[in-house]
Image (cartoon, rainbow, N blue to C red; front, top):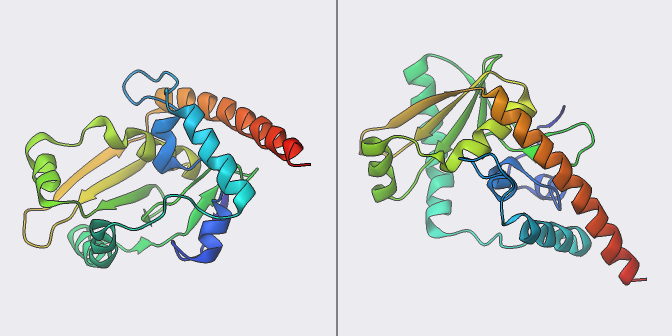
Length: 202
């Protein structure tokens, strides 16, 4: 495991994760419910090869709510730390030893935990309050647990005036084994695709 303590969103952070699969996109490699290969894997390979060869991140234009989330994240961290009477550790990027797979936790918690913070649209936040956490973030959270080696992850949906939503997700080793196998296969295909396009450019 390689831990880079660069600021998320910085040039160093973007370059370190350029052209490699990251946990927030693992749902494009494995379907969260069935643990089978995702139909979108081929398109994800195309995107990552393009990023690698161009040396720039694609589809990175921030939306209004993404910008709002960045502003509210520090407030959400302070709320979480006060509520749990703990300190959290900011981290830029966690990479596998071969630097071919990564994740960017919002925070690490103590020796065993991690933290994912969302500041979504109000209707989505209310959806968490009423219906709980869906399968949507299973791949991202289990991916963070896999790459960090940690035991649990807290998911927080934060809104400054509405009730806060929080869920703790434990490590799911069965899912992680299936995910790791499919990610390994994906990386092999990714490297083959890179080589093929590079040879075309000669």
